[in-house]
Length: 562
Ligand SMILES: *Cc1c(COP(=O)(O)O)cnc(C)c1O
Image (cartoon, rainbow, N blue to C red; front, side, top):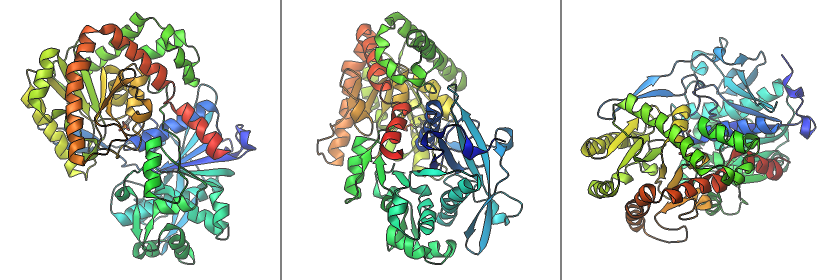
């Protein structure tokens, strides 16, 4: 095998960027991701390969990483284990790394999956694995389940990812220029670097980049020092953790903040929210993007290839989308829509029609995403439907431990039954990357109703825009930057500067949602087709043009990596 550290992408004098993420969504067949964080990491890797960036990604193998979601007729989620065999898709490298957890040394191996771009760029992705004969049975399970188990299990995973990851990169001969922590799960890598730098934080900071994704206080990993000292080798390590990660409990975000020179949030609003949460730190923003080629459906790829050759590796070319004749764009969308509607009707027995205004909503089923907001007033929905037919396609898995999220799915099934015969509502099983691609290209309107300020960025709306699908969303995360009312889409609820109580805000959200549907969206779709097509164009020209991961990675390179 070619020696990894010596690949030809030596733009940084043979130095490599190491990108650490607890989850990475590369392809559906490698189910080691749970949602937005993972798909973002996947897009990061794909764009890096296209751009020829010298980057290596590190994550966990999580063989029991995900589950296949089945929904019974009441919407009750049934979780089936996904059985897959890494050896069918990846290469097991011979090198080993070792970490000490508690009283035992644990051996770590790595599976390598190489993303190869048509441009010739390659990015190796390393999936760390402790399931080795020489490890104790309990230790062999550490890299099994993504976000599973208790605090102790999670901390063990973070030791393997952060500390084990750095050691594995060494074992493979990489020379690392920067360590990029995608969220705080990997921040123990900075502990390993601290030790190597004789405890000098300045030298560690120079090597570390930290991207935070969590806009709420409770979302940050915290561990009690009782647990930490039980699992992490003694010596002065605990002292260092307390010094940089908080004296009461080990806060992984704080630890990363204190040991990184470049810190960023994933949208401008999220930077502001993070700055308020962590005063005293300079927090930048690099707004997320999606991998244009991956998230553009075949019919639009064909159009872009024909009229904007080179667009996949230079999404800025989408700025000239107006040269595509309207009727071709309408036809490209119709093809994607037919495909989705066929899939929906086949898989759920729904009776959806291709000519009906189709609203899509899919994301992790969890409370703050408010998937049931659209159903707050069924009679209002019926009235809207009487002005012009609508149909609704939804999807999303609930985390196995998220009982509230599971209840939300059941609630939606109840609404679907209540509306049957009037408004078709389908909830598709097993929301994964392939289904996401189908949905974000096949609906007409992409709806998003998160509770502010919980949506750090959000990315599915950017995917929709690549396919001429129009966003209708609460002003949070990336949408504040992408939104031009009536031009690139529509907002729901108060504008960012407005200071309302939660109850008032919710009322405004619901009012806006319904009145814009009734008085703007439905009439435009059915009676002002030209304006609709204009907005499809605008979405591509102003949203896809900017909210792509090529732009995002170029920003990371010039602001954080160089
Ligand atoms: C894009 C994507 C997400 C993230 O979407 P959000 O809008 O950020 O919630 C989650 N899951 C899958 C499968 C995706 O493709």
